[in-house]
Image 1 (tube, rainbow, N blue to C red):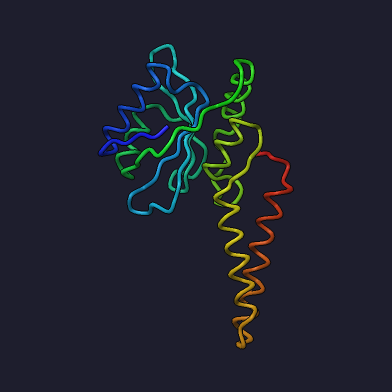
Image 2 (image 1 turned 30 degrees about the vertical axis):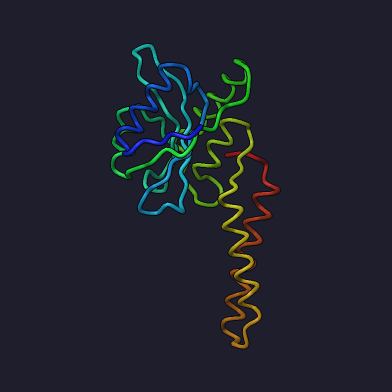
Length: 185
């Protein structure tokens, strides 16, 4: 589902409207981008609406430092600060029992530190939605790092070759760890 509105504030209120009308439901994720760095993707997960009609979201980012349960006012401040644009909604696929389990997974993650490689925002959203902590974004970057390291190893310069070997090994390590991890966030 594409949301094409002009600014972060309009998109934020459109997002709240979609929650209030049931288009976005508990455990649905959404992908946002920062116009300053459009290559970076951020993933947030809508948690629930409390008895006071406050909407809550599971969020983690490097600038936040850990997993937080943010209310709509905190999310608004974050969205405006970073000028987020909502790119798409990632629906939760599951029944009500699975939704309760997903919410519990999210609650259990609160306070866990952010890590670009193994505990980023995409890992969190996927872990909440599926129980598997995976990040396509991390895999793509780690694969690129491994390839760059391999290319550097073809250099005639020994220092560049050695650096390439280290870079390539790091990229491969991240890929292997992601593929064979226990799927815990």
